[in-house]
Figure 1: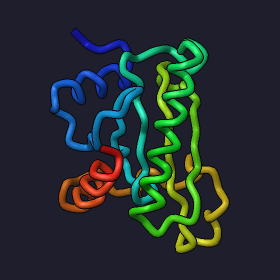
Figure 2 (figure 1 turned 180 degrees about the vertical axis):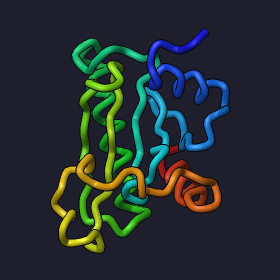
Figure 3 (figure 1 turned 90 degrees about the vertical axis):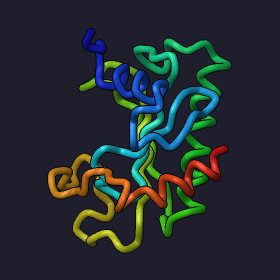
Amino acid sequence: MTPPTVIHGMVERCRAADYPPAVGRMRSGWVVMGARQVLMGYCVLLPDPVLQHLNALPPELRAQFQADMAAVGDALLAVTTALRINYAIFGNVDPALHAHIFPRYSTEPEATRTAQPWALDWNAAPTFSETLHGALRRRLGELLR
């Protein structure tokens, strides 16, 4: 059976330990590296169980999801040269809760340094691969455990 959203499918694969970009389990769900590494270290936090949006979570679980999101940002700051972290929750394209976590770097091209991440060239971004991103994924996982 086809999962209702990409997010559901990713969570199912994380549960089955069959999703190579998975960083690890958090209290609120799963953190995975983005399929397209538009910014090195780009991650997505997926709730488990999957819900439609942040407001569908009871207050204590909502707070945990947001705390986990910030913890991923802290870990990215610790293991990359990022200056800051951008966070985004939309759910318009894939209507299931998930949070995008983007490290931002001083080395980004000046023309896009202050642009929101969807203005970047996602087609030119490298696809997650164990060879290119595995060491970073492992370091993140160690910090988040």
